[in-house]
Image 1 (cartoon, rainbow, N blue to C red):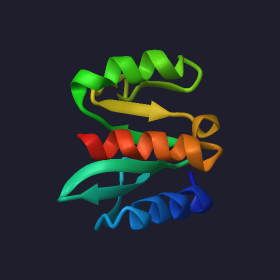
Image 2 (cartoon, rainbow, N blue to C red):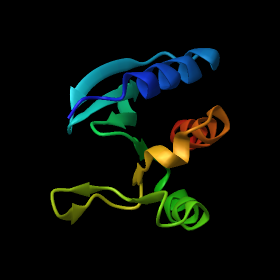
Image 3 (cartoon, rainbow, N blue to C red):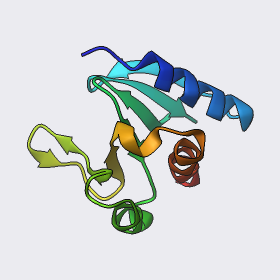
Image 4 (spheres, rainbow, N blue to C red):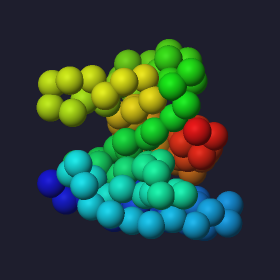
Length: 108
């Protein structure tokens, strides 16, 4: 599936606005943004984000977002754990919402 280039550009701008340096790689069917050599975010093929967060914060973020907007990410059929969240495209439609998820990834 094609990566949502508009969302990728919004993530780039969000990171750049914070003065964050990052690398980009394609993996897991996503365009991955690495910060400090570790995965922070990924723009998913087909829309939405893969967000890596502090595992102690993952459940709270999921509960606050609701099941329609975020869930634990899957690798195949296996859950990736509480620090890997799959965030729907609807949950990052505006810049305020995108900022929320980028901030969560950078707190890790």
